[in-house]
Amino acid sequence: MSTEHIIPNPSPKETTDGEDLYEAYEIELQSSVGNTIRFGDLIAGKGSNITTLVIFIRHFFCIYDQDYVRTVSNHLTDSILNTLPVTAGPSQVIIIGCGDPARIVPYVAETAATLPVYTDPTGKLYSKLHMKRNVTGITRPPSYTEVSFLRALGRTLKQMFRTGGLIRAFRGGPWNLNGGEWVFRKGRCVFVHRMESIGDHLTAQQLLEVLGQEGGGTE
Image 1 (cartoon, helix red, strand yellow):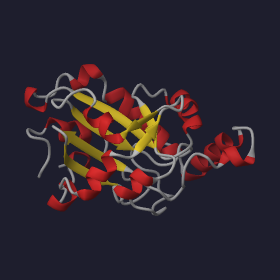
Image 2 (cartoon, helix red, strand yellow; image 1 turned 90 degrees about the horizontal axis):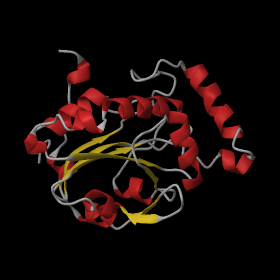
Image 3 (cartoon, one colour; image 1 turned 135 degrees about the horizontal axis):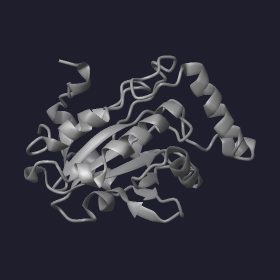
Image 4 (cartoon, rainbow, N blue to C red; image 1 turned 45 degrees about the vertical axis):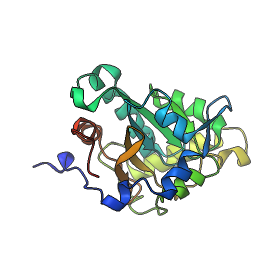
């Protein structure tokens, strides 16, 4: 079987609705216009029958993640999500970054993202959900990009210093903070994948398989 179709098996501890997760629901995120919204409201705002996939990305200048978001936006469209089993229920996909909210609009323009994007500029949500910090594999481009490391580095630096100032150039978020993918159903977390390295996002195909699982992953 191709590794593209191997879904990580989260441990029960990772999917338990524990104290950290409840505290995470209370953390406020920011939109592109500076409005705040509780993480929990993003999960349950459209009703308890909605399945929510949350994709936590790396810093806004990460070229690898930009290519990833382009791919995900093209493959997780409403028309495709509507083909999922009825048992999965309606699904929504949300992207959360870790940089300055002023970087959301340029990020959407750069990636042509069709999915809603919010940010956690304080890093509190990433920390509460125990996202990992490292730059492991930074010189090895992941499968969801065709850009070499040197080209990616060059494009990253170009985007950073095109922002109009040295201070703004470093507001994309921490370079060593990784993200992951979380699935919520009926207010509960049913699937977790934390990135082990900088190129460890689940592919769009893997995400569709996770979303299509009856009951939503393991508990």
